[in-house]
Image 1 (cartoon, rainbow, N blue to C red):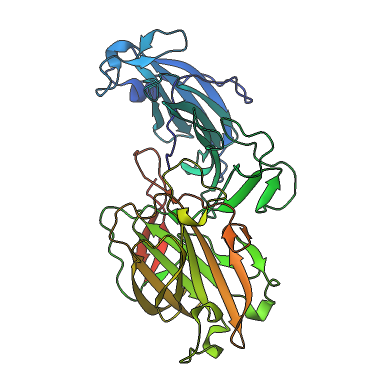
Image 2 (tube, one colour):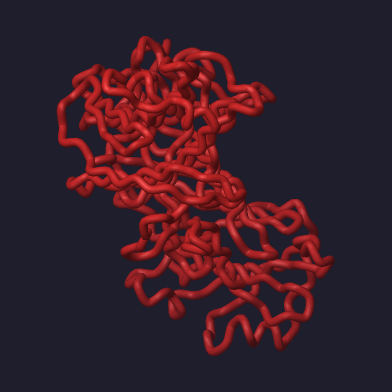
Length: 435
């Protein structure tokens, strides 16, 4: 995943233009940069504490261009400059730079564009760019505290139909969803991304003729070489899928009643490891026997893309691998391509509610084993038989409709302030960055 960076073009904003920063604020913003000018200052409403907010848009000349841009930044009319900065003015606090933007073309095609919009305690930035792979997206931030709230992005190949994926991120809940055109059923496949569905209809495996959706497995910000010791539980770093149908699709059976709801959390560690946590109140009553098939036991299924094409939908069986992992940590080969299986570790842990959970860690030897997408299914069992299946994607005729890519989050910028997933009290939990 690419968390988008924006640059220089400022939209007409819905809030009133504020008075320019005073002399001391301007000095703090510009410092010794001789080409620094306060282009406009915009009313941004109030912080949650009631403090007045405004945002100053600052333009820089070529002499003050970023050090890593030899030719400077592009302006809308083709000239070169030093880029644009956005500074938050929050009451009597010193001005704080929240964005530093430089349009360098955003990819080898040189088609980069960007826009910024301010609204009450919000800043939204849109950017497009790329090469043969094009992308665009809008990230919406809270101004106070400064952090991303949501993002909707599109990525597609300029010469490949049905390669486009539109992804929706909710950074507060960590729910990530995506949609794409199904190459097998779309009535008019094209270049680009499908439109995100409108209206109150629930998210579903099939959203429109030939458009399919899925929940994506997330790789949260873990830092370099993260240590995840045995006994660690997954906290709130990722969303919870349940057999009642939350953040997943019931693809077999009926949603679980309240006292039987299983909860599943899955997070990626790069593209070669998965951590999967299961709380299942029915699992203890489903012991394995000598004749038990893993299919009839409580288990996790993974459908892993093995194709090297741009499409992720309606894959033939020779471009898929199915594996099953029971709650004792045994890995079972399913149907599809016979590529190497991962190693597995299994341990018990306690979740935030003090419940006993099963944690499975899967590690592949190939650093890019999961590059072509992963769909996850959990099978809940009763009396030695499958009772219901919940899945991150639609399943038709025992095949996934869509195998979504892993969404890896990166904290690439000191102004980005993406929440980090860190070990706290034996659980991987969100740790908000310092202001």
